[in-house]
Amino acid sequence: MKLGSHVSMSGKKMLMGSVEEALHYDANTFMIYTGAPQNTRRKSIDRLRIEEARDLMVDNGIDPSDVVVHAPYIINLANPDKDKRSFAVDFLTEEIIRADAIGAQDIVLHPGSHVKEGVDTGIAYVSESLDEVFARTEDLSIRIALETMSGKGTELGRSFEELRRIIDHVEASHRLSVCFDTCHAHDAGYDVHDFDALMRHFDDIIGLERLRVFHLNDSKNPRGANKDRHANLGEGYIGFDTIARIVHHSDYEAIPKILETPYVTASDDSKKRVYPPYKEEIEMLKANAYTPGLIERIRRNHAG
Image (cartoon, rainbow, N blue to C red; front, side, top):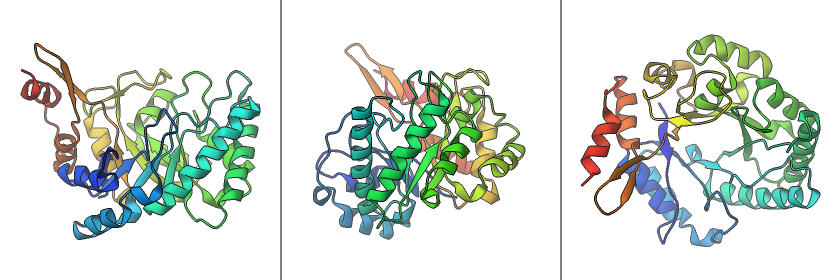
């Protein structure tokens, strides 16, 4: 199975540090942002330490092509403001070039928000924007993986049908793939517990050949809440067994599966600290056995 988590890429080590963090979690894939997801500050490609990181991956059994890059949240290709949409196109183009240099095959993208202009208008804008991005990067083969969304606010991608409409309106649609987020799909109203039936529906609407990334998250909300609040594995309405079934499903073992579950907050008398639970959650998934009270145990171990 290809199983990992979101890891950081910062400081002097950059991508080297990302690989080291993934190896610490016993992961064989991972996801990164090329910089903070809330801003446009980025280091130049020649400072990312790509070659050293690729050597470290190969030496430890990680296929560099299994690295997943996530586009920053500030990109909204559906923004009705032309200048803001133009900024989003420019920045996404730069991110694709950076992701390609890293060796990723897919860059995950939230489809965008129509900002109360309506779904039809939003889909038209995002499709037009994607056409522009693909025209600027036509010499690259990297795909944009449209993420399934929870349906909060005015975001697009809350249904398979909305993603299909975007795909159908983009000229270079062969460069579009899909990232399936378990929390988002659940919060959008899909029955993730009946996973095989859900994937048949996905295949009917979008096509399984476009499914290239999984985001694995439990949900703090009941099905159909349209809220997008991730929970740790086994701590929400989806449950550990359902997510483990996806991880161990033989039909999807070649697809990178990325944990985005919440960090654990621990407090002492002076301050709060946060710790990623990914090593322990990956261990649970590999063993296909839930550890009750895991998050509380991590919290106690780091408190005081």
